[in-house]
Image (cartoon, rainbow, N blue to C red; front, side):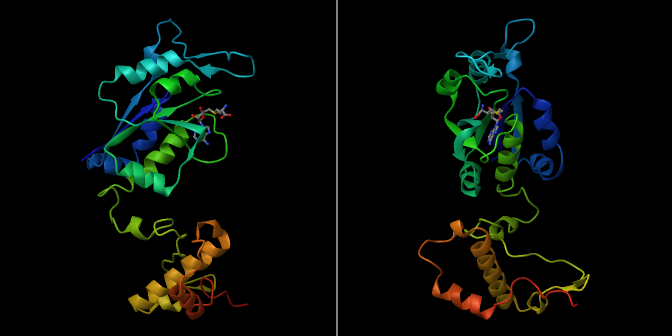
Length: 249
Ligand code: SAM
């Protein structure tokens, strides 16, 4: 089934341009997902197609008016739900939210601009609010693209090899182990022997140990508060070395 993603944005061309390349385009061509953009400027009545106005109570900047947003949502009869506003005040987007959205038939992303969107539009037509991190972008379009790419690549058939999403960072609560490709030696740095041994069991153990070590040092917050299992402790002892051997001299 095709995942239907609609985006409400003042800049449809930004979304369409990015979606028209690489994995998103290939996935759309295969029917994995479909993008539709809706511009709230088309739901204005004045000749200047005004979508913003000054904030009540004063302050810097402009606010997106409620009416064009609400009219846009209501004018699309088959708009996929939930309608999700992108905002720094939303719940934090992560791989588990990506998986949650990838399991739906579709959803709509609402991009803000300026100082944000009139609260009454959010109250009237929005089901959920998502933030892609604790920083402030100028608009929701980049945030929407982050969400779209993270979600679409989880859909079956989106990637050449569906295994790719099984072993990557966050899939098992850990950061991913280091990756290597040819040549076996680069500027004196060697690929760890175990990866060239052909012993798949040992490779899997080495990768798990590296993923554990990397997560412990970089993102301990991701680890189970109960601590490491006995099997994982043994793996860390079996592979005490971090990454590959260092360059000579
Ligand atoms: N005044 C708002 C505030 O302080 O929360 C920031 C508005 S921001 C300049 C304009 C728009 O960019 C927002 O309405 C939202 O759609 C988008 N945006 C900015 N940062 C974001 C983030 N971290 N996650 C998701 N969307 C974001």
